[in-house]
Length: 508
Image 1: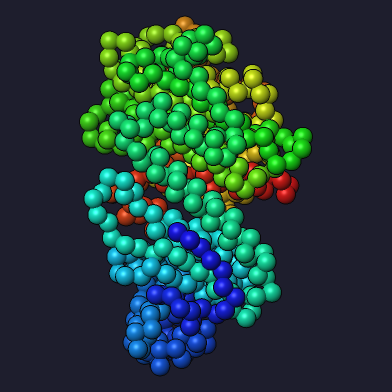
Image 2: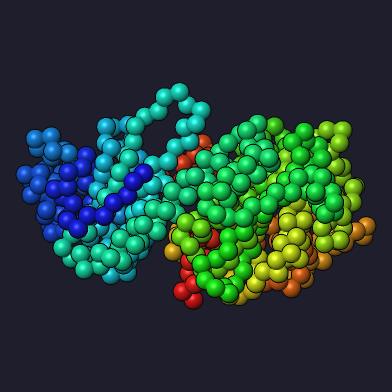
C-alpha cells in the first residue's frame, strides 16, 4: 500500500473514503461534537442526523459509513472508545478496522484526518505512525495461492490540517519510516506464510541471498557438509530426518555509524515441525509451517535495518531445519555435541527449537563477539499458556536490553512481558548424561527452562530471549480476538519491535 501526506484537512480530499476518529459519547451526552462540524457540513447535515440517531457512538470497533451527496465519496467514522483510555494502539487498531471495512467495496484510495486521532497524551507523530501501521498491515492478505481476490485500499493519505502543518517535516519522516517498516512486515508475512513444501531450509537461504544482493548485505550459508565440519551437532540432529538438509544462514549488515556496537539477532527457523519421533498430535499440525517465524522475523529485521540505515552493526543468524521422523531422525536418548563443544541430552525430539538455536548462538558469540544477543523463537507451548496468543515472553540477563525492548514494545504495539530466570530454572535443565537436557522431568515453567537452556550457549554476553510461540501467527479461532491488523496466518511479530529497538539505540 502506498502512503502519502497531504497538508490539507482531508474532509474534501479527492479520495474514495475519508476516515475520522470519534471518541465514545457519554451515556447522557446529546450535544453534537464540534470536532465533527466539518464532516457534517460536507454531508449537508447527515453526520449530525446519524449522531442524533446514535448510529455514531464512538465505541471501539464501531465503523459507521456516511455517503456524501452527489456521489462525492464516503466518510468513515471509526470508534476510538473512551478518551481517557485512548493511546496509539487504539489508533493503530482503528486504522486497520477502517481499511478492513472498505475491503471489496470499491474503495482504492482513503484519507485519515490526523487531528481526529491526536490528543494531549498521543502526539501527532505517535498517531501518524500508528495510522500507517494499521492501514498497511490491516490491508494485508496472503493471496499467493488464490485464483481471485477482492480488491482493497491501495493508497492511504495522512491529512494534516491547518493545526498540524507546522509539524509537516517530522510527520513526513514518520510516515516514510513507518511505511517502510510496515512494508517489510508484509514482506515477512508472505515468506512466513509459505507452506513447508516451498519454504525449505534451502529456500530460506535463497531468500537471504536475494536480500543480500538487493540491499548490499553480506550473506553466508553453511550447508550440511560445512555444518558437519563445524561440528554443529544440534542442527544436524534436528534436520537429520528430512530430505531437506539444514542450513545455518548468516547475514551481516555493517551499520550506519562508524565503530557502532554490534547487535546479534538469532532466529529459530524450523520450516516444518512434526515433532520428530516424539510426534505431535494431528490436530493443528498444519500450523507448524509457522515454526520458522523467528528466523523469518530476523530476515525481515535485517531488511528494515538496511533500508532505514540504522546505526548499529547487525548480525542476523537463521538456524533452519525441518523436523521429521524417519530412519535417519534423531531419537530420545541421543546426545548431540554443539558448535561450542557443549553437549545436549535429547529427551524429547519435539523440543527441537532450542537444539538448533544452540549452534546458532554458540557460533555468533564465538565468531562475532557481539555486544549483545537477542534471539527470537516460537519455542514453547508454555509461553502461550502463560501469556496467551498476543503477548510474547521476554527473558533478559541485561537490564539495558530489557528496558530498550520494553520501550520499543510500547511504541510499536507488539506486546512483550518480562519473565524471571533463576537458578531454579537453570538447575532443571542440567543433565546427568551431558551438559544440558532439552526437556525436564517435571512439566513446570517450560518457557523459563527453555530460556535457561539457551543461556548456556551465550556465556557472559548480554542476552535477551523472546518467545513468540503465541503471537507469531493467528488461526481462524484466535483471529477473532486479535486486532484487525493481525490477519489470519503469519503476523510477522518481532520485526516492528526489533527494528524500533535498533532505531532507538542510536538515539540513546
